[in-house]
Amino acid sequence: MRVIIIGGGISGLATALSLEAAGFRPVVYEAVTKPEPLGVGINLLPHAMRELTELGLLAALREAGVEIEELVYLTKDGRDIWQEPRGLAAGYRWPQIAIHRGKLQMLLLARVQERLGPDAVRFGHTLADVESSETGAVAYFVDRASGRRLESSQGDVLIAADGIHSAVRRKFYPDEGIPKWNGVTLSRSTTLITSSPGGARMIWAGHSRQKFVAYPIGRDAATGQTLLNWICDLKGESTETPPPEDWNRKGDRAALLSAYDGWRWDEIDVPAIIRASGDIYEFPMVDRDPLPRWTFGCTTLLGDAAHPMYPVGSNGATQGVIDARVIAFHLSSAPNVETALARYEEERREATARIVLMNRAQGPDKVMDLAEERAPTREHDLDAVLPHAERAEIAAGYKKVAGFDPASLNARPSYSLKERPE
Image (tube, rainbow, N blue to C red):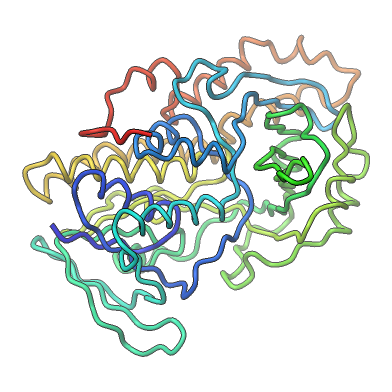
């Protein structure tokens, strides 16, 4: 079976590895001419780590990232809202790992080229068009640098993992328009610090209109310093989505320092972290509406091309990894491509749509907004107005919707026909 993957990001490369483990030889086409380890930090939740472990990547990911042991929600003045163990400490059979996005992508790329050969990823191939029928798909490409036409590729299956601005999605939904922005701008960077606040834990502070997030994603072996990934979310007045060329633009350090002046408590000094950081970049917090259909003939959507979601609950990359494993499982076990893609979509489309919509409602971060609404200052008794049972229900409910309730995840059958040893 000839499988074409459009997009060489995390989801596309995870799909290539999943298909290789299932006995296929896919080819990945990526628009970027030269891969570089760009980006900042992401979290791989236990349901993603289960899949990556079964692909033989656990040891490499542990070496490259940091195992997260705890999640802490705080008010804007540092009061505890919610704490919970994460990863192995929470009873999962797999850890939760925070890692630099670029480092993860380069690790996946190296494994794809190691297992499928150096030509398994074709760089500099920008998708110009796709034709799809019940018997196969054809992808047409142009050279990103020169614009000249490149050789087309014909396959039995085409999997579109080309992100939130997916050209394949736009082919089948030409009137959808640009992504939806909720008015929140994410400013992101990393800072080298002597030690991570609270060790291997994730910190969420504030509320949906102004939030600070921080967690370690690596350590400098020479100096012993921790690389802290941090995000500042600020909601503005406008909700008109900025054009794509304005994404990933340099952020305003002075404006952030002004907005977060006074955010200091216990081991955390937000202004000091911002001052000491590297370059700061801004991104709009965007998603798209869930789709009624992903599959058209022998072409289907995957990852952010299928279900871009707000970065709430650390589920974006994780859901792309799970998509990859599910589609590989069904392509290897179904009697034909049509049945495989139907089973993949049946299993994943509504499940991810629920997460998209729940993230719009703040997902597990909802406890922060409730704390701000009911107990905005230290004079208010947070425990009296936001009972612990209500907080626990929000946390547990999100895990069930997002597919990482510990008991259910630990008990679920594997998507591997044969697990790859470490």
